[in-house]
Image 1 (cartoon, helix red, strand yellow):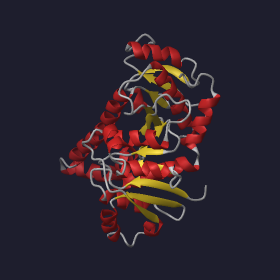
Image 2 (tube, one colour):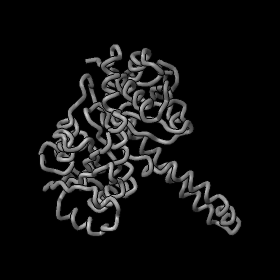
Image 3 (cartoon, one colour):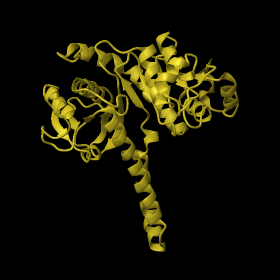
Image 4 (cartoon, one colour):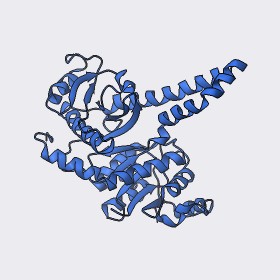
Length: 338
């Protein structure tokens, strides 16, 4: 596909539309059109601030008279506000005006809008949020990162299949390994649901058994599977721990003259480390299990985070990630446990 069109919820995020518009302009290019969906007056005001950016000629404004805030019940708001920016962004995909949708706003609203309009893929029981995070093994896919607070064993089995295919297509792992997040490596550890899921996962290619929280940063496996409640807690802890450690290192580096000298020598290496762990730089999380790429970013993310989220969506379109996942789910025996 030579030219990709990504619908961006310009009113989603803590600092919308400023950050969303700026990030969309950074991502837009001759082969990537960004549809800025939101209040056309507010978007126009932001566009005037960035007249010199090359992406200015590759954005299209789609007016949405309403928006969903971060404090609203996402699923309910998506249904009650059909003309909100997040809903209209997903409708652009449904109507064929866009190839993918991105929102940095209300996660629940983006999920609901995606399922309502982009629609669930054939055979998928529950869509799952899959996020790619840095680890000792390079990168690790974690899912579900928040779509389903409660899940059944058969849901986790399907999450494992989708995560495996995402690791193959995005991370380039020919035979990715899969671990089930639990409180111990033994099959009998964890809740009844986790124990039952362990039994169902035995026939999934690449499944190595249970893994613990410490295995996520170590990169022990390529894919970590869990329910959305546990996955979201793990992800938020992971990201905040990285920020805390950098603040501690910065404080230590400024604590004395000797520390400042040492800090200056280490600065290039620490910057590389910071960039690798910065959540703004590895894009948003992908909602797997719907018919088109839907990417959900951090509401607090800056324009760089928006840019990378849009680029993640565009890459998913070009590599036909969703189509390949759907085809594999249909091909694998027992993939859909309806």
